[in-house]
Image 1 (cartoon, rainbow, N blue to C red):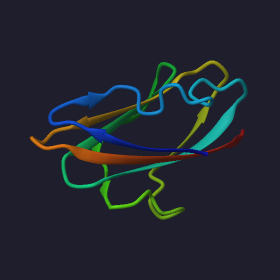
Image 2 (cartoon, rainbow, N blue to C red):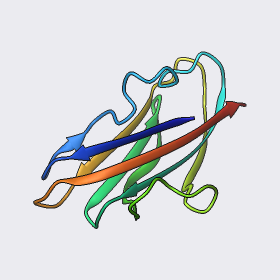
Image 3 (cartoon, rainbow, N blue to C red):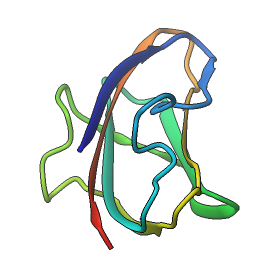
Image 4 (tube, one colour):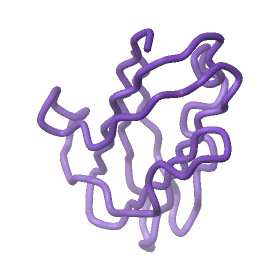
Length: 108
């Protein structure tokens, strides 16, 4: 399981939300179930795995905690070996917002 909380500064983009995580580039096929929340309106998320676009830039759920399992897990995909999982979080507002991500991983 990957969990991360990050503050995204005004009009900035976090280009690699889970960068450096041991499962960012899997060594075996993984089934991923992911959810993201933001502290307020204005955070948008785009997800790519390898060369595949999993989610176009879309607003995240507004919640002051990590996503609730299973209710707020918005996407399911399979990550193949050596495919980098990239979660891009962008703040469209003039203030700092907090983004929270949770990715459940299991062998595919």
